[in-house]
Image 1 (cartoon, rainbow, N blue to C red):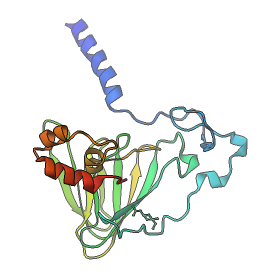
Image 2: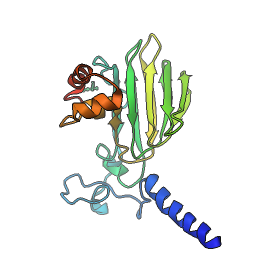
Image 3: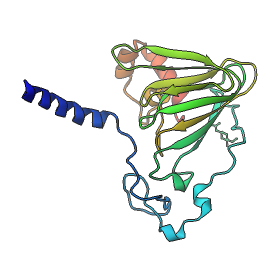
Image 4: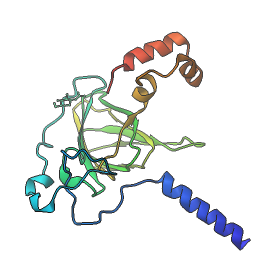
Length: 221
Ligand SMILES: *[C@@H]1O[C@H](CO)[C@@H](O)[C@H](O)[C@H]1NC(C)=O
């Protein structure tokens, strides 16, 4: 019995360490990314610490709103390790998200490598996330200025401006490179496209509707 429990525990430990991948801990004070390096490692290559300057830990301009005029009416300004070299190996990033009035949407998406904690600076957002199978339970809430909500790693989530004024939120993410899978774009806008036979069956849609959806999301980012 004890042997069985040990085997089960070992199995769970192995499985869960893979299922909950997160950024590794740093092995030095900092590892400012050398954006010019052509070496591929897990993260970005460090530049020589002697060449590191205050500017390497700095990113300006998050006071400026992103342009939300394009569908679906939101704009994410993400400050990850690619944009702020000093974030390399530190396991966090930051985003400003702007929403157009009356329906600006940050559509359902996943960050494969990060939990997100979001706070509303201006406006009113209806936000939520859905748990994994078999429950697929939606946790949602209307957020006002100053409210904070957390979206657990790897789950589908969204934010929607239900107010009549522009909304602004800031989000912290638990990875230097959270990654983004926008659900509709990944499914209907993949390159090359997923076969109609798969999509008609998966979504119980006719071919015409699948083709229409693919046309909406083709070449989208
Ligand atoms: C987000 O806003 C910036 C700054 O206004 C703009 O350059 C960029 O094209 C916008 N992105 C989208 C997807 O609209």
